[in-house]
Amino acid sequence: MDRGRLFGRGISFPPRVGPDGRVAWSEGEQNIREAIRVILLTELSERLNLAEFGGGLGRFLFEPNIVTTRHQIVRRISQALALWEPRIAVEEVAVEPDPDDPQAAVATITYKLVATQSRERVSLGVTLGG
Image (cartoon, rainbow, N blue to C red):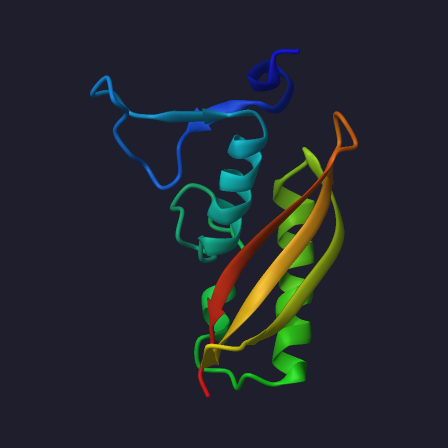
């Protein structure tokens, strides 16, 4: 099975140069994981020609690290991925306090790949205020 054809291919994130001196590409499941990060780390209005694109998680920067804030982050992540990443079906989004940083949380997204029904998981840190 050609995973690149099945799941897509794109410029790697973060962008980097490959061993051949050219821009590195990602494909397959890695491309989907990178796309999730791009969506969630992009602020609304950051893309000039697609202002509604992104997760907008930066709006939580000065919010307290409390249960209510973390529930809002769960909703925002779920909405953004449902809108912008059709290759996955989100099963669960959990946002918990970061045990190493009282002003941060860790978001863990569990999803199934639509094409294969394979279950995957990705985590990312979210910086909060206080």
